[in-house]
Length: 262
Length: 258
Image (cartoon, rainbow over all chains, first blue to last red; front, side, top):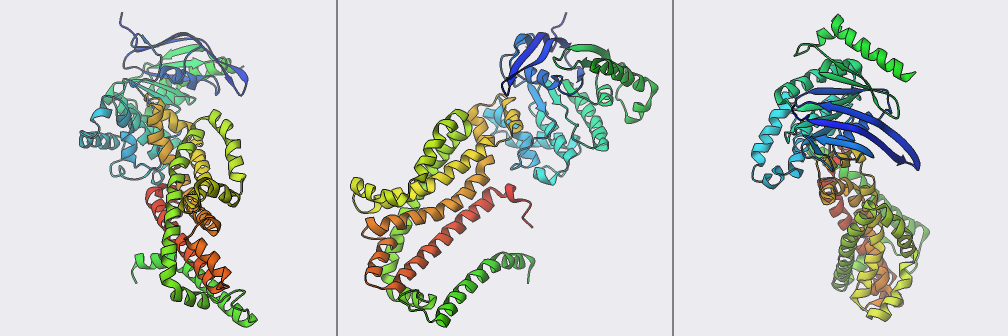
C-alpha cells in the first residue's frame, strides 16, 4: 500500500478565541492520495479553514495526527503552497514580484535567488501566461481586477513547485462569471502540474466541477459526515455543469448538507 | 505648454500663491495699521535686516541645521527600533506605552536647564532636545504601521516557513513605510523647534542664541529674520522627505496620483 500524500488521523482541535473556548474540529480523519484534487465543503464556521491551517502547519492539532508523506507535521511546510479568499498580494510589489515572493523565502531557491533571478522571472512570466495574464506582469496589484489578483495569487502559490496546493475559498470573493472562468484555469494548472490540491469551498458546483473527491463537514464541532467520489471525465467543461450526471452529484451533496444543518 | 509642465505648475502654484498672499497681507496690514517695527516688523523690513546681517546669520543657521539633523537622525534610528519592538509585541506595547506617553508629556523646554547641568552649554543640549521632541511621532507611527499588518499578508509568509525577521523585511517594514514617512515630515519640523528652544538658553551660537541677543538689543527685525530662516530651512527639509516619500511609498498614494 502506498503512503497517502496527506493524512489526518482522528484530529480534534480546541482553542480559545476572545477568552471563549471553541471546539473547532472533532475526530476528523481523511486521506488524500498523491495527485488528487479534493474539496471540503460544509456550512460556514464548520472548521474547513482550520483543516488547511493544520495541514500547512500554521496551527497544531489538540489531539490526533496530521501527516504529509507519512511524516507528522510540526511546523510550516515549504512543500505546501497556499492561496486565500483574498488575493493578499503585497501592494508595493508588481504582479511578477508578488509571484516571486516564495522563491525569496523558501530554500533552496532562496540561496540562489540573486544568481538565478533571470530564470525565476521567466518561470514566473510563464505561469502568469498560463493563467492569462500575459502583459500584466509589471502592473501593481491595484491596477488588476479582483479576478486577475486571484490569478496572481494562484501563481504565487505554485511558483516554488509545492507538492500540495491548499486553497481556502479561493474564488469566493469573485463574481460568478469570473469564478467559473477561473475553475477552468485552475483545472488546467492542476493538469499541468499534477500536484495534490485540497480546496475548501461552500460552492458545491465548484467542488463537483474540480474535484475527484468531495468531503462534507458538519457544523461546529466539525466532523466529516459524507464523502463523494466524482466520476466525471476530464477535462470538464462549463457546458457539462448542466449535464444530468453533474447536477445529480451537486444534488446529492446539497441534500447531505441540508441534513447536517438541521 | 507640455502636459508634464502643466502638472508640475499645478502642484507648485497653490503653495507659492498661499505664501505670497500671506506675506502680502502681513506687509499691507502692518502698513495700514501703522504697526511699529519694534512690535511687528513688516516682512520687507525683516528681509532687509536679513540682507544686512547675512554674514552673521548663516554660521548660526548652519549650526542650528547641524544640531537638528543630528538629533533627527538619532530619532529615526531609535524611533524605528522602538517602534518595531512595540509594533510587533503586544506585551512590549502594553509595558512601554505609558512610559513613552509620560516622557512625551514632559515639556522639552523644561529639560534644557537639566541638560545644561549635565552637559554644559553648547551643541549637546540642542541635539538632545531635537532628538527627544522628534522621537515620539516616529516610534508611534512605525509601531502603528507594523501592528496593523493584515494577518493574511503575514500568513502568506508564515505558511512558507519564513522567519520573524523575514516577515519584518518582506512585509512589516515596507507596509509601515507610508506611516514612517508621514511621521518624518512631522518630526523634522519638530526637531527644528527643539533645537531652537535649546539654543535660546543653552548655547553660544545657533539661530536661537542669535535671536536672544538680537531681542536684548531691541533688534526686532533681526529676530524675525532669524525666524524666517528657520522656517525656510524647515520647508526645505520637509520637501526632501516629501520627495523621498513619493519615491519610496508611492504605492500608498495611488488614488491621488493623476
